[in-house]
Image (tube, rainbow, N blue to C red; front, side, top):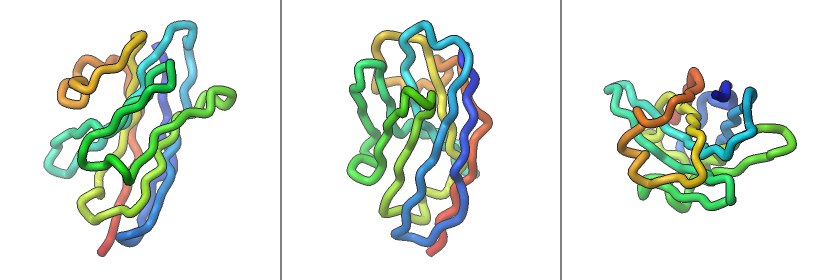
Amino acid sequence: QVQLTESGGGSVQAGGSLRLSCETSGDRSYSYCLYWFRQFPSKRREGLAYLEHTGETDYSDSVKGRFTISEDKAENTLYLQMNDLYADDSAVYYCAARPDSYCYYYTFNDPETLPDWGRGTQVTVSQ
C-alpha cells in the first residue's frame, strides 16, 4: 500500500496551465501503476492518464496533447502538467495507484480496481 498526497490545484483562467503533484510514500518495493483521475461536481469520475513503471504512458482522448504525466522517482512524486485548460477541466483531481507490472486503459472506466487514492486537489478554470 502507498499513501498519496496531491497538491498544486488552484484557480486559473482558460488557456492557462497548472502542474499538479502527487507525493507518494509507503511500500514502493512493488512495481506500481500510477494514475490521475478527476471527479466533476456531478460525481462522474474520469480517468485521465497513467504511468507504468516502465515509463509507458497513456491518456484519455479528452486530455491527450494537453496533459502530461511524469514522475520524479528521486522525489517519489508524480506530476500532471496541464496546459491549455478549459472551463470543462474544472474538477477535483486525484492520483491513484495499484501494485501491478502493467497499466491498462480500461482502468480509466473501472477506478474501483485501484486500491490507493489521495484526497484530491481542486482545479477551477474560469472563462
